[in-house]
Amino acid sequence: MKDRPLILVTNDDGISAPGLIHLAAIASRFGRVVVVAPDKPQSGMGHAITINSTLRLHETSYHNAEMEFACTGTPVDCVKMAVNHLLKQKPDLVLSGINHGSNSSINVIYSGTMSAAVEGALEGAKSIGFSLCDYSLHADFAQATPFLEQIIEHTLLNDLPKGVCLNVNIPKLQTNQIKGIKVVRQANAIWHEKFDERQDPYGRNYYWLTGEFVNFEPKAIDTDEWALQNNYISVVPVHTDLTAHFALQNLKTLEK
Amino acid sequence: MKDRPLILVTNDDGISAPGLIHLAAIASRFGRVVVVAPDKPQSGMGHAITINSTLRLHETSYHNAEMEFACTGTPVDCVKMAVNHLLKQKPDLVLSGINHGSNSSINVIYSGTMSAAVEGALEGAKSIGFSLCDYSLHADFAQATPFLEQIIEHTLLNDLPKGVCLNVNIPKLQTNQIKGIKVVRQANAIWHEKFDERQDPYGRNYYWLTGEFVNFEPKAIDTDEWALQNNYISVVPVHTDLTAHFALQNLKTLEK
Image (tube, rainbow over all chains, first blue to last red):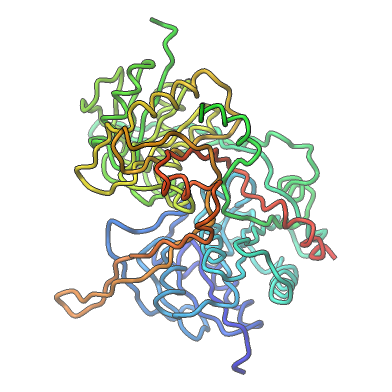
């Protein structure tokens, strides 16, 4: 079966996370699976890479994969390590997730799951990040399986523009409650942070970062937030050109 | 002088880095300065935030600022902590840097410096990240001062679109060798990684992430890489809508 696609599976919740085990199992129906994932939870790591310290790899056996390693680095390190060191070839597909919790709208820039998918696209592979809008340890990853299979199959059979990956978010619903898939744009939203201030036993302050999600365009029907609110799986094509092209012209006054 | 702008200064190289000291000094000519920066180097941290552990603040005195704190978190944590906890108001301007080393083109997504600037824009402030293309510990941050002052003044006096910040990269040149400022787009480039494999004294492998920068469009004259190669300071407006809008239509087949 040498023609089966080579699929790299990773995540940010760590090598033993239930969402990764579920995704690797789905992936094995489509091709040869290699898993390289962080050895510990790396949520909120964004596009961090490890340049001030070293990386290590440890072979594991959580998955039914051709090869699997836990890496001491970030999700992005895992993709770089898999593609450039372990495989020494571009995989046909990179799958990241399934994340415990949403990576819709602005969460895409904080998300280790999505940064791994973005790195897959930078490496030249087709690449998808999956997130389930359920933070519970007992989240049911199986409900969306038919839709995930549809998205993976579609991605293997069709071209994606170079450097573009997919950000797939799944509402917390039973299979028969999910209305379908919507291809949408990233909603304009932010987090309003609140710092939960506490005192340690020695009287010194410490802080937990918490926040409240604010969607600036709750009525816009072409966004990922709208799709999720209306029981659809959202698919946003994501790229890495962060240039605000619309702002270039007005700024030219800076050149004098 | 209550009408002087409130300027938050941060970086990713840490609270005592020479580039930060230089930037805070420049900032003090334009307004009241507050410095909140990481307590240790945080290069390559991208848009990472701290959600699995706690944060602490320590007052420091490296700068001539109204208020300054070292934070145990990432550059993005520093901005969130400054705006939402310490200041409890939006600063008029967020300045990040001056980074030791380039954050042009694709480096923007790996950069803690730029992620802090992006976070400033998400918080609703005008925001600029500065990077000097010189990794040396003895980098001369002073050469570009007149241009940095020009960019800061222009930003204070003119509107920036909501959510847009500036990515400013400075070539390693003497003042009189810098030809001026170019407002440009992010070049299409990537890093080709190589892992430097070594053995520890116990015979176990470990790895250093290294890489080679590849610019896919070296001749495009509207890019940051071209500007820097041609002795200009590059200014790229950066936003946080990662949607690949051009890819939306073709993907609609996924909705069936």
